[in-house]
Length: 388
Image (cartoon, rainbow, N blue to C red):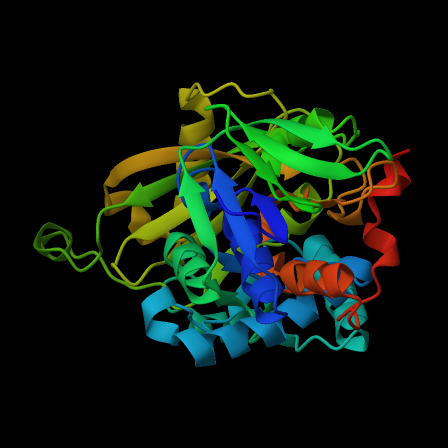
């Protein structure tokens, strides 16, 4: 393998975005992944590009930057090939109390630059005709988008021109006499000389950091997605099934589960259609390590909550379910930037469930740090040294 300017560990969405922007800044990039492109958390995600679930603050700044960059990526790569859809989001509240909290959040988001339109209970059906009756109201977020994450990661890597090696596990990160990065060692015994490594390994980011003698407290947070039959199928039509669902629709309590520190199981209703006509149903969060079992009660709860929001889904079959692990950091902010103890090691992980949406701004920020360019957002809140 030739000597690159930077080796990126991880070929998920964040690693692909880092490669894309680093290459655009003139760097020779090699990407390594022990599995495949988008073979980890990226391939198990819904493709969310959301501003609706962000609290005002540093992550909101990163989100708004990413929304702009996603639109630029769509213009460059084509929205169709990556299935980038500006479908908008609809957050609904079931009680007056939850509606009041949702309105307060929307007001703070608007002050931060977010488009948030209050929707009265009687107007919800104009946005989603098949919503359950009796909801208290909601907020429409026209900036919310969705992308097909596996397609997007693959096309970003292809557009970057980076050298990509899949099925290559990183077993070591060598350091020189001054303590800086000197080389990456693979499971096959290959040694790739480089002065710079970007840790974009997602839920395995802590393990990659440890290879260089660094510390990053990334933990996995498990979540499940149900996938229905295509609503356009003949069997669904014969049962009088309607569709598609126009927006990404979720209950107001979803925002609180995103920022919760609770390790126990939490679920909230998230429902949306895909271009293929299927419906994705989530979401759940729990910290159970890398447990890959499928507890039936959790899946039942997700299905029950979805039917409560869209009653017609009771007549729809679930084709499959899959799980993924979100890379969780204790303060719910990703680590983006140089490691304080290992010169040449940069971290770009810990985005939890927002990695798809935040990938472009993360990649642009890493590229700016690698080349001494102007950062697109303030990097200070995301500095890895905040964990000691």
